[in-house]
Structures are given as structure tokens and as C-alpha cells.
Image (cartoon, rainbow, N blue to C red):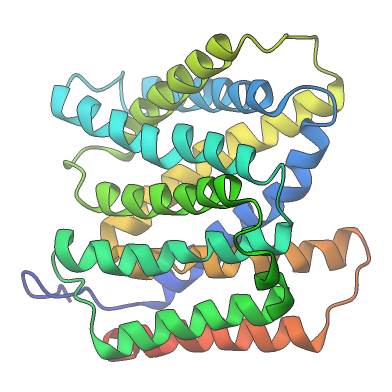
Length: 299
């Protein structure tokens, strides 16, 4: 059953499943990034990651999509999504987290759903900022604060440029979700390949401008870049574009609340770290926020 024109689409179990899949993939990225940047500079590693993502996306587009898109409107939209969804936030967040605690970075990144809810209210049809949605988004943000601990807020303002850069990355992601929702209709393969091409070119340009020395990556670095490029970027973008085409930006933005929770879960499985009651309580608050924000649309 389709929703009425201008109305928010109903939230179905498959949408929640796709949200969890994306959060799981991106939540695992933190560990893999640490492996990759151990041998080469972060910007160079990001460029390598996106080169692999672009290669995989282009090959899939050539096989499934029968070539790259020839629609100039799509290429223009892909440029802005590549800029705000990959290149610019990658740079801002990488530079920001060099000098601030990861806990504070998680809180700053958690402003993304808040920004998305406001932007979507004005720029996405059927995604009005209703009281239940505002309550759900706010509850999810509180869940992040519980997850990392309120003490992380004590560092707010200490490294203001770095903190603003990290928060700017969150704003970029909010813009990218709204842009993706309003993207012109096109096959998924064409959307992803065009976005990956622009993302790669923009990051490569940044790496060349900074003149960071290039060096031969180790096998571990190549494997890490391959996972991040092919799975966490190319494949994840396919899932992302599919989800955002069926759901509101505000719903998709809950990803930023779930990703840190999955990061802790992977830490427990891979690094044998303990899962605390604090983490369980935070997850309950985040899931409760998603339910409250979407309860009138659940089907």
C-alpha cells in the first residue's frame, strides 16, 4: 500500500532491517580504519578506499546498469552528494578527531539526526517535524549521551575549531540525506557509480593539494581499504540509496544513533570488551526514540 502524495511513507520491518544492516556495516568501520591508517596518512587511505569503491561501483554499473549514466541532471546531483556525503565530511571529521576525545566526537556526530529533522522539515516532502518525531530524535540523542557518558561534554569548547569541524561533518551528512531523498529518479547502479566517481575525484584532489607523501601500503592496509571501499562504501551506498528512496530523511538519520552502539558491540565480539548496562540502556533509549518518532507510521 503506497502513502498519499506528500505524506510520510509507512515504516515497515524491512526498513528497520536495512537501517540495522547499514548501522552494522558502518559501525564495524571504526576498527578497520584504525588498521588502515596505521601505515599511511588518513587522507591517502581515504583516497585508496574511494578508488576501490569507485572501481567496484563502475564495474557493477557496466554489467548491471549497462554502462554509466548519461543524464547530466543525475551527474550534477551526484557531485553534491559526493561532496556532502563523502569528501567533505571525511576531511572535516578526520581533522577534527585528531585533537578531541572519541566520546565527545560521538556526541557531536549525534547532532546529525537533529540537523536532518530540521532540514527535512523544510526540504523533504512528507517529513514534517512533528512533536512525536522531535521527542524521538531527542530521546535518541540522550541515548548517545548516556552511551558515552555525560562527562564527555566537559570538553566542549576546549578545541573549538576541531569540534566545529566534527560537527560540520555531521551537518554535511544531514545535508546529504536530504539531497539523496530529492535525487532524480535513476537506477541504483547509476546513482552509486556517479557518486563514487565524484567522491573519489574530490578526495584525490584534496590528497594531491596537501602533497602528503604516498607510500606502498601493506597487505593489511589494502585489505582494510578493500573492505571499507567495496563493502562499507560501495555496497553500503546501494543500501542507503534504496532505503532513502523509500523512507524519510529523519528515519534514515537514526543511523548516527545506532552506529556507536554497533561499534561497542563489535568491540565486545572482536576485542572481548564488556557490554555494560550503560550501553544496553543507551540502545533501549535509541530504539525507543525510533519507535516514538515512527509509531504512527509502523505497519
